[in-house]
Length: 486
Image 1 (spheres, rainbow, N blue to C red):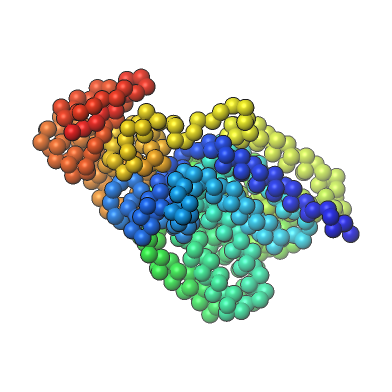
Image 2: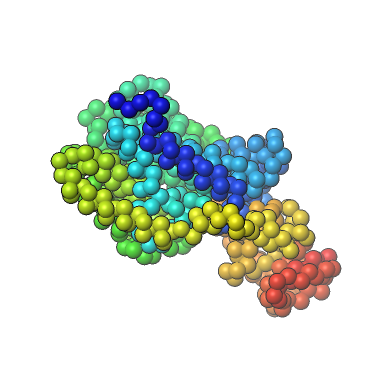
């Protein structure tokens, strides 16, 4: 028996991951969606009961106002921290929750204390080339960017929910089923895409328990989940789900380089899935892979690229299966074969470190400064105040990403720089944004639009625009200019 003073193998591995998350929070190499989430928290911090859209000055139910961001908004309100600093504080907590959820989920399939310790590096490293740095995709490349995002919290809750659901099958009391339904409702509000993944996983878990399942408690849990979703006052999750098709174009990159990105982990995970299917034709992990691949494939065939958000279910199921079966195989009869398989998996993980190390290295190199998020566009944020509307070209890639960063400093825009299918006048706003910047727009029409959206500033990235009502011009990098309007 292991001495009591020797920690479980997962503890030092998880502690190392948590310390890295603390370093991420300190170094803050934020990019991508971070400005949007910071804007959401800031808006909730300032207007907790009636927050406006975090991208434009409009009061509509916004899907980013989730239990997670409302909680962070309350923390910001009580502490006085900005949205950026509140998210920094949340990053290690989010990762700790993810570590806990992974441990609970892996222990469903293995009693070995080594299985969770092996599963964590599998989840981070068992990827192919160009591992996506999207929200919800947990890997070494993306983790420093997404650790504080709602999708990370939703994934952590989903892992906990799957473990809870599995034990509910064994102890199916009405209270446990009601709690399971409420749990799913919270996940659906925090991140609807992850909620779909959670349901796929639940179906896979339930397949092996079909004989003992009763429809009434399952339907009751579904009713509780629906009640939680419908009772949420900050946004309409049903409306968000119905508008998901408008996000297909954004998700098309998830289907590029599929074989290079997902082929290696699927190939190396095949022995684990075969072993599990031999023992149980309805094995939950194998069923998760099959169901999620079917949904991803349906998205490929139909052109509904948003279904590519189910890739994380495929990967997590494969990675956990590899961890569980490797630990078991190394203690079994075929240790030579297990050793060869282990060498291949470890080699793939080492190669993945080589491919994915850039963001992690930027965090770890404490001797090399990282540009602070607030300073990335300081020549703009030093002039444009929080809540003021800035006009810029959202059709140009460089200014589009500038706008997304500026959201974190409280700057607002005529049209949303991120897709916002729940904003009723999003299409009109995009058209008005283009008309404002078009050279042939009549001055009276331009004045009307500037007044409608209360535009105070214009970012002229090419330095070619002429504004008769300009009160001040601030020179920026290269030809870029910041123009204050009268």
